[in-house]
Image: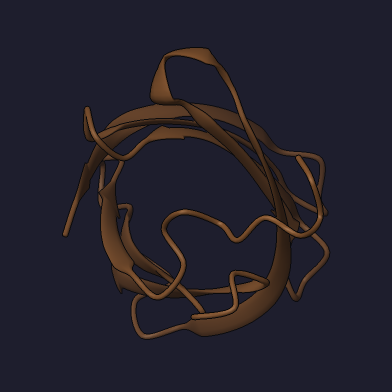
Length: 106
């Protein structure tokens, strides 16, 4: 990624649904430097956090996105916004590791 490039989905918001009571909205700022995650369902419902994120373009319309949450948990998404698919690798500070797949909608 060239650092002068703007994240193609900057200024947009997407609902990410991994099922099993894990649904949240990711909203990317207009300048494409931060994402706000708002948990809509599940144990963290109502929680909002904003953090800087990094991204690169992969083949086939996939985007690799990564960030560190406020509690220092780490998240890596492989999202295809056109095909509405998402895969995620999530590591919690307590050592839990989750591999998730789900859907994206606007």
